[in-house]
Image 1 (cartoon, chains in turn red, green):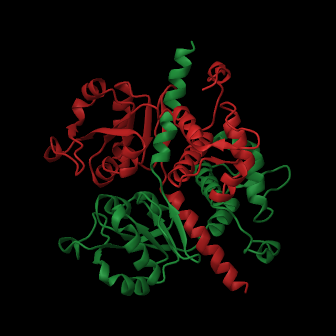
Image 2 (cartoon, chains in turn cyan, blue):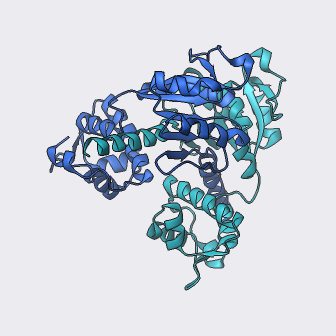
Image 3 (cartoon, chains in turn orange, purple):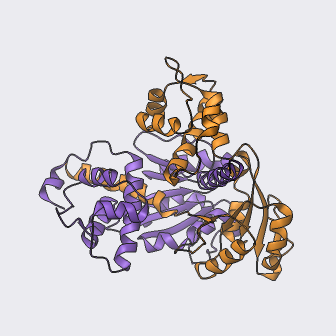
Length: 224
Length: 224
């Protein structure tokens, strides 16, 4: 990071949308890096991955001057910077609340480990599950042990994968244990104090984008 | 839909990002409608849900003239239009390939049903699973029956929830059976013919947005 960048007031609000886009850029750079690409312009990056070149330049400029005139971005360099901006230059430690199908699937989700997240613990209320492990080896603890495990394992993020009617309760538990960031897969809106960051994942959005595609295709056929 | 809108050439490329945003707008309108809000301006919509007002106007203008000068948008009307644009004015029928933890979790994911998606069938290769059902009652078929079930149940979308090394194989099966839209949860890139729409879901992006928040928060503390 440049000195100029270090001095930048980080308190300025950067929207969640920006974070999402940085994540997408990182994914694209990983692909380019794996393919042996050394440098890329914002225009080429945009074209190859159907992104917006002006938006890429704007998003990246906010964090410093990463582009080199006439060259574009150095892929490895920009990757490293993005990982730093996204807080991925260290292992981020995650606990999952709920060891049902979704919790177990998330515990062993291969992408998490690849990107530097460590899924450290699962929690459940069902006695038969306590002490067991996910296929990938993540241990299931009783929810009563949450506070203790959060301290001991230095948990950064709690993932909520319980049914909707238990979701607010487990979020409260997480917040009381000092967790500052919550990823919620449960439908319905949860309440957290202002200092805690809550992100809701709505899997429906992805299905809707496909449904949109099918609807347009059908309209095309109908209109000849 | 207005006549003007009907006549609009739907072949024009609308990006997946637009579809994603329309989905988000629909989610916001659902919230407003449930709260009894009748009309809303693009500005108020943007402020309330941390969106971009100019982007909202641009996205919606593409599909017709939904806004009324001095009033904004009629919430129920716009909801109905968005559902139509997103192809949600009819039930969209979904099959899930893979009845492991992720497949079973998706089969019973409450959001899908609420938004008008019907999860019609699960498929697996494991003998012990065939003929059983998810908790929510979705039946598990042998993968060999895929083509037959797709025709009979008029499947619109196939969801891929198998391990990475089986993913391309099951996508090929889906494409050969005539499925035109695929939602892939498996990491790694899959190949489909140009006429088939593939959408990859990367759950890591959501975790990264929280990690980004934590990193910025720490930087703030460090900078005083």
